[in-house]
Image (cartoon, rainbow, N blue to C red):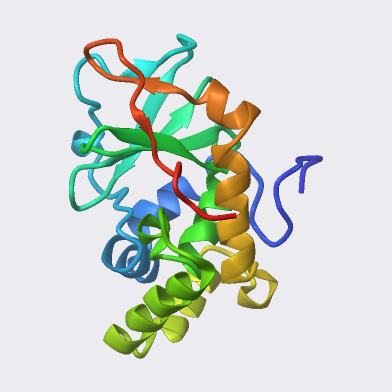
Length: 196
Protein backbone atom coordinates (compact mmCIF):
# COMPACT_ATOMS: atom_id res chain seq x y z
CA UNK A 1 0.00 0.00 0.00
CA UNK A 2 2.95 2.33 -0.54
CA UNK A 3 3.30 2.99 3.20
CA UNK A 4 -0.04 4.77 3.28
CA UNK A 5 -2.53 4.75 6.13
CA UNK A 6 -5.41 4.09 3.72
CA UNK A 7 -8.07 1.70 4.99
CA UNK A 8 -7.58 -1.97 4.24
CA UNK A 9 -9.25 -3.24 1.11
CA UNK A 10 -9.12 0.07 -0.78
CA UNK A 11 -6.46 1.12 -3.25
CA UNK A 12 -4.20 3.73 -1.67
CA UNK A 13 -2.18 5.26 -4.47
CA UNK A 14 -2.91 8.89 -5.26
CA UNK A 15 -5.54 9.47 -7.91
CA UNK A 16 -6.66 5.85 -7.97
CA UNK A 17 -10.37 6.13 -7.19
CA UNK A 18 -11.58 9.46 -8.54
CA UNK A 19 -10.88 8.64 -12.19
CA UNK A 20 -12.78 5.35 -11.79
CA UNK A 21 -15.78 7.16 -10.28
CA UNK A 22 -16.00 9.06 -13.56
CA UNK A 23 -14.99 6.42 -16.10
CA UNK A 24 -16.01 2.87 -15.16
CA UNK A 25 -19.67 2.28 -16.12
CA UNK A 26 -20.43 -0.20 -13.31
CA UNK A 27 -19.05 2.30 -10.81
CA UNK A 28 -20.93 5.25 -12.36
CA UNK A 29 -24.18 3.25 -12.36
CA UNK A 30 -23.85 2.57 -8.64
CA UNK A 31 -22.39 5.83 -7.37
CA UNK A 32 -24.37 8.27 -9.55
CA UNK A 33 -27.50 6.14 -9.80
CA UNK A 34 -27.74 4.60 -6.32
CA UNK A 35 -25.49 6.60 -3.95
CA UNK A 36 -26.16 9.96 -5.68
CA UNK A 37 -22.46 10.83 -6.04
CA UNK A 38 -21.71 11.93 -9.60
CA UNK A 39 -18.08 12.62 -10.48
CA UNK A 40 -18.56 12.38 -14.26
CA UNK A 41 -18.84 16.06 -15.21
CA UNK A 42 -15.93 18.30 -14.17
CA UNK A 43 -17.87 21.38 -15.34
CA UNK A 44 -20.32 20.76 -12.47
CA UNK A 45 -17.56 21.13 -9.88
CA UNK A 46 -18.13 24.79 -9.02
CA UNK A 47 -19.05 25.75 -5.48
CA UNK A 48 -21.55 28.51 -4.85
CA UNK A 49 -19.81 31.88 -4.57
CA UNK A 50 -18.62 32.67 -1.06
CA UNK A 51 -18.86 29.10 0.28
CA UNK A 52 -15.56 28.34 1.99
CA UNK A 53 -13.92 26.75 5.01
CA UNK A 54 -13.83 28.87 8.17
CA UNK A 55 -10.14 27.93 8.58
CA UNK A 56 -9.24 29.38 5.19
CA UNK A 57 -8.01 25.97 3.97
CA UNK A 58 -8.72 24.94 0.41
CA UNK A 59 -12.16 23.51 -0.42
CA UNK A 60 -12.16 21.56 -3.69
CA UNK A 61 -15.38 20.14 -5.11
CA UNK A 62 -14.92 16.80 -6.89
CA UNK A 63 -18.50 15.51 -7.30
CA UNK A 64 -22.16 16.52 -7.10
CA UNK A 65 -25.40 14.97 -5.95
CA UNK A 66 -28.42 15.14 -8.25
CA UNK A 67 -29.77 18.00 -6.14
CA UNK A 68 -26.63 20.06 -6.79
CA UNK A 69 -25.18 19.41 -3.32
CA UNK A 70 -21.37 19.21 -3.35
CA UNK A 71 -18.78 16.63 -2.29
CA UNK A 72 -15.51 18.45 -1.53
CA UNK A 73 -11.97 17.70 -0.46
CA UNK A 74 -10.54 19.77 2.40
CA UNK A 75 -7.00 21.18 2.25
CA UNK A 76 -4.11 20.25 -0.01
CA UNK A 77 -3.16 16.79 -1.21
CA UNK A 78 -4.80 13.89 -2.96
CA UNK A 79 -7.60 11.47 -2.22
CA UNK A 80 -6.49 11.07 1.41
CA UNK A 81 -7.92 14.50 2.31
CA UNK A 82 -11.06 14.81 4.47
CA UNK A 83 -14.32 14.94 2.52
CA UNK A 84 -17.19 17.29 3.37
CA UNK A 85 -20.70 17.39 1.96
CA UNK A 86 -22.26 20.80 1.37
CA UNK A 87 -26.01 20.91 0.96
CA UNK A 88 -27.82 23.64 -0.95
CA UNK A 89 -30.16 23.68 2.08
CA UNK A 90 -27.43 25.35 4.15
CA UNK A 91 -25.95 22.30 5.87
CA UNK A 92 -22.44 20.91 5.71
CA UNK A 93 -20.31 18.36 7.48
CA UNK A 94 -17.52 15.81 7.21
CA UNK A 95 -18.30 12.42 5.68
CA UNK A 96 -14.95 10.69 5.59
CA UNK A 97 -11.21 10.99 6.09
CA UNK A 98 -10.32 10.40 2.46
CA UNK A 99 -12.02 9.20 -0.69
CA UNK A 100 -11.48 5.50 0.16
CA UNK A 101 -13.56 5.93 3.32
CA UNK A 102 -16.27 7.83 1.41
CA UNK A 103 -16.38 5.05 -1.17
CA UNK A 104 -16.96 2.48 1.60
CA UNK A 105 -19.70 4.64 3.17
CA UNK A 106 -21.52 4.93 -0.16
CA UNK A 107 -21.15 1.23 -0.89
CA UNK A 108 -22.60 0.05 2.43
CA UNK A 109 -25.06 2.87 3.20
CA UNK A 110 -26.01 4.73 0.00
CA UNK A 111 -28.96 6.13 1.97
CA UNK A 112 -26.66 7.95 4.47
CA UNK A 113 -28.36 11.31 3.74
CA UNK A 114 -31.49 9.97 5.42
CA UNK A 115 -29.64 9.36 8.72
CA UNK A 116 -30.09 12.67 10.60
CA UNK A 117 -32.73 12.44 13.30
CA UNK A 118 -33.40 8.73 12.86
CA UNK A 119 -32.97 5.97 15.42
CA UNK A 120 -31.00 2.82 14.52
CA UNK A 121 -34.31 1.00 13.98
CA UNK A 122 -35.55 3.72 11.65
CA UNK A 123 -32.26 3.55 9.74
CA UNK A 124 -32.82 -0.19 9.26
CA UNK A 125 -36.25 0.66 7.82
CA UNK A 126 -34.65 3.16 5.41
CA UNK A 127 -32.12 0.52 4.32
CA UNK A 128 -34.97 -1.95 3.88
CA UNK A 129 -36.85 0.51 1.66
CA UNK A 130 -33.76 0.94 -0.50
CA UNK A 131 -33.57 -2.83 -0.92
CA UNK A 132 -37.29 -3.07 -1.72
CA UNK A 133 -36.97 -0.37 -4.38
CA UNK A 134 -33.78 -1.94 -5.71
CA UNK A 135 -33.79 -5.71 -5.21
CA UNK A 136 -30.42 -6.01 -6.93
CA UNK A 137 -28.76 -3.43 -4.63
CA UNK A 138 -26.26 -5.86 -3.11
CA UNK A 139 -25.29 -7.27 -6.52
CA UNK A 140 -24.80 -3.74 -7.93
CA UNK A 141 -22.79 -2.75 -4.84
CA UNK A 142 -20.54 -5.80 -5.15
CA UNK A 143 -19.91 -5.21 -8.86
CA UNK A 144 -19.04 -1.54 -8.26
CA UNK A 145 -16.79 -2.48 -5.34
CA UNK A 146 -14.88 -5.03 -7.41
CA UNK A 147 -14.48 -2.53 -10.27
CA UNK A 148 -12.81 -0.22 -7.73
CA UNK A 149 -10.57 -2.99 -6.41
CA UNK A 150 -12.51 -3.27 -3.14
CA UNK A 151 -13.33 -6.68 -1.68
CA UNK A 152 -17.05 -6.58 -0.79
CA UNK A 153 -16.41 -9.01 2.09
CA UNK A 154 -14.13 -6.41 3.70
CA UNK A 155 -16.72 -3.62 3.76
CA UNK A 156 -17.89 -2.33 7.16
CA UNK A 157 -21.41 -2.96 8.39
CA UNK A 158 -24.09 -0.31 7.90
CA UNK A 159 -24.05 0.29 11.67
CA UNK A 160 -20.27 0.82 11.66
CA UNK A 161 -20.59 3.28 8.78
CA UNK A 162 -23.24 5.27 10.67
CA UNK A 163 -21.15 5.20 13.85
CA UNK A 164 -18.26 6.65 11.86
CA UNK A 165 -20.47 9.53 10.61
CA UNK A 166 -21.42 10.30 14.20
CA UNK A 167 -17.75 10.22 15.25
CA UNK A 168 -16.71 12.58 12.45
CA UNK A 169 -19.61 14.96 13.06
CA UNK A 170 -18.54 15.61 16.64
CA UNK A 171 -15.05 16.69 17.52
CA UNK A 172 -11.87 17.93 15.90
CA UNK A 173 -12.65 16.81 12.34
CA UNK A 174 -15.96 18.68 12.36
CA UNK A 175 -14.23 21.79 13.74
CA UNK A 176 -11.51 21.62 11.06
CA UNK A 177 -14.15 21.15 8.34
CA UNK A 178 -16.48 23.99 9.39
CA UNK A 179 -18.01 25.50 6.24
CA UNK A 180 -19.31 29.06 6.05
CA UNK A 181 -21.74 30.44 3.51
CA UNK A 182 -21.57 33.51 1.33
CA UNK A 183 -22.77 35.70 4.23
CA UNK A 184 -19.88 34.49 6.40
CA UNK A 185 -22.11 32.51 8.77
CA UNK A 186 -21.34 28.84 9.55
CA UNK A 187 -23.62 26.40 7.76
CA UNK A 188 -25.73 24.14 9.97
CA UNK A 189 -24.10 20.81 10.92
CA UNK A 190 -25.12 18.08 8.50
CA UNK A 191 -25.39 15.41 11.18
CA UNK A 192 -26.36 17.35 14.28
CA UNK A 193 -29.32 15.04 14.85
CA UNK A 194 -27.83 11.58 14.35
CA UNK A 195 -28.62 9.55 17.45
CA UNK A 196 -25.68 7.88 19.18
